[in-house]
Image (cartoon, rainbow, N blue to C red; front, side, top):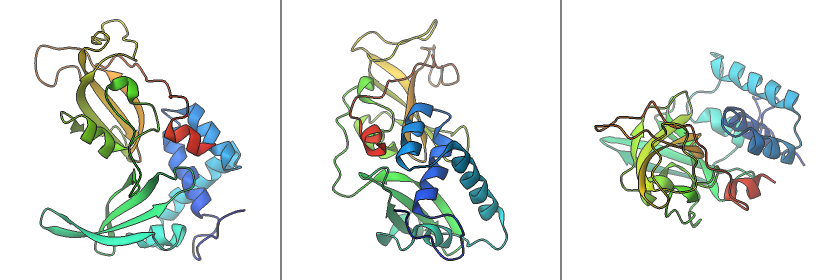
Length: 239
């Protein structure tokens, strides 16, 4: 059964909003996106059309601003509170999404018209996966905060596009195939990696070239990817 759509945003509700999120993830994980799209009962054509409708809506001068854009599509949030960000007090709203039951879509807003951040975060009471090394970082299994907590060396990098985040970190190796000149550490040995996230959800992990100084290799990753683990949180949720 389709979710109730909010008044004022024709054709876009919770189901369609998930298709919008999936559209950006397809660049990294087309297989997982296909599984999730089928689970939502959507065709590829519908996915394109929904994304186009969303883009028209957010560009319209008559579109709801700030967090009202999300409440008009997703309905009332599951939680609505405040968070101090430096000297600012921000509003934090969260919604459940059926594709990722262990996560919540979080919007951090300043005032009624400005959204500072919107991404997937772990739901309260949901345990993150055990992340002991890079081999545990399966696509769609964890969010930015999970990786940051598991690997204290993690530092943010500039995202490659809107709705994308990156972390560079050091972790025990193994589980990735280093390409020529990839500089991948041996099995179990510490290596440097970069993790790419879309809407806060892990998409891929790449080994970095080992360079002579701090920051070297960030632009020259080996391009290796961790394979989705059987039964990983993202894949099982998408079915």
